[in-house]
Image (cartoon, rainbow, N blue to C red):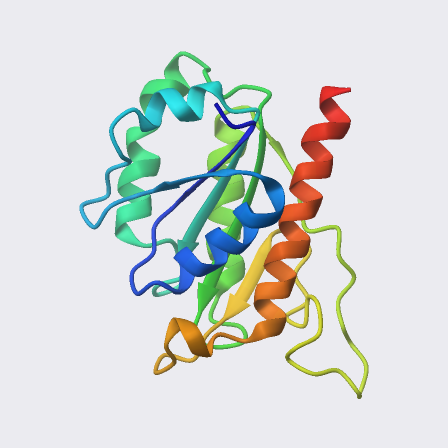
Length: 184
């Protein structure tokens, strides 16, 4: 079992590409939520065995997708038994605009983690906030609470901003180092 499990829903593939970038550098296991809002068979056991659970969802209408919400509601069973208590948690989201109310999505994920008694890990990245900044800079969106990426609504996964994918990889490195630090 992987120390880091990335449980996510992706409507059009963009969030899946971010999840893959996080997994590439964190060594995490991907656990996709299907189009009906269900984790794969054995998914709940995989989550129970993890040291860190990373939540991922696109931001739709200012919050997580309904599929992610269904998964979150179904997590009341592990909540009741406190299965995820004291595990590390983190989150990421993608939407079509720079703001896109992504912060509401991350707050939803943080609240879910807090209800489970988990410990939240933010990005640990400084924002890029100078005139020479470009969309390809690390953490150009400027998020501290979790990873935020932006993909225009008419862009394919191949057209995602390289800086956002690089930021996702940096986020994965932070998650890996946090798990390693706390395991020592």
